Length: 158
Image (tube, rainbow, N blue to C red; front, top):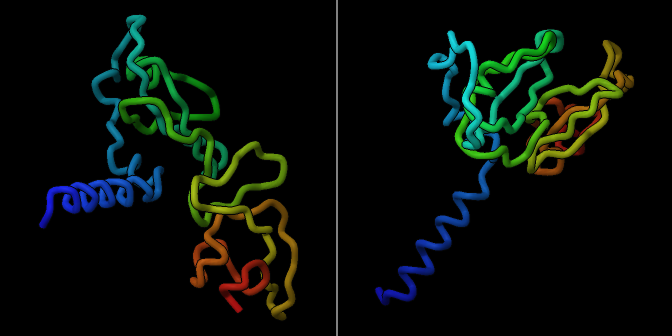
């Protein structure tokens, strides 16, 4: 095989692999905060990390936030959020929800890359479509009836 074609093939593989779900790749590389468990203070150095925060009040709410370093992320304290872990580097997309996650009305959360908002409408016991408020993050339109999708809110489930 000619070197030019080999280079194009390698470049194509790299580009395609970079287009996968960003948050899934981030999740696989999550580093636990164990090293900072007993930290009394953090040094002021800029080595950004992307931390995953989970809501203590609403299990559907996950937030990704960039901190100046791992120590700052792991010692972050807020009454309604807890840091689950972090990855090195800034967050690729902050404050986004994964596939199948229901977001109530009024929440300032968007769907992660590759997902779209579909209304929260579900069939009741009679099969009639009823609004339930808020929205789901879904892949509606991909031909598969996935998480958060049903006959009332996505053509894939007809």
